Length: 131
Image 1: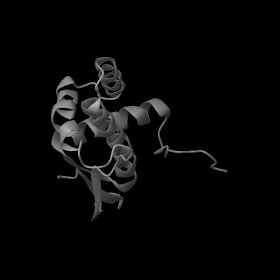
Image 2 (image 1 turned 135 degrees about the vertical axis):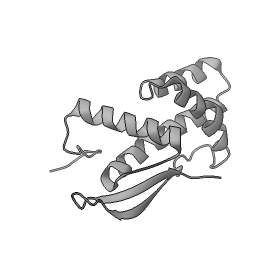
Image 3 (image 1 turned 90 degrees about the horizontal axis):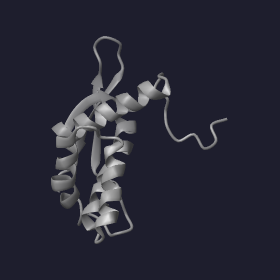
Image 4 (image 1 turned 30 degrees about the horizontal axis):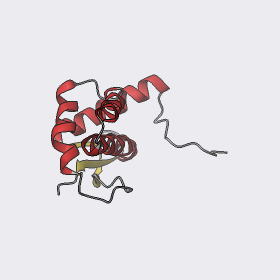
């Protein structure tokens, strides 16, 4: 039974899977658009939307200690300082007025683009939604 199982294993051990998803999330935040398989796109979408929500909360936080706590949670996932800085300076304010204070998510879009030539895996284009 799959009770309370929230994520897909993607055929990898935990450390490898988390590193792969971190790299995909970093690439998505750097380039604003990447092509990957559909299942990877779904997982990296979840991770990226959570990171953007944290950046949005850091932008809206009034207390400096709360802002620092949100930044530290993002730095646990994103190890590239330039990407993290862009996340807080550009993407957080961009999506700050997108939803009411209680809602989050809806920052990424997944479009299916066909099959991969080598093994026939379903491919998807994942991109950040522009406001």
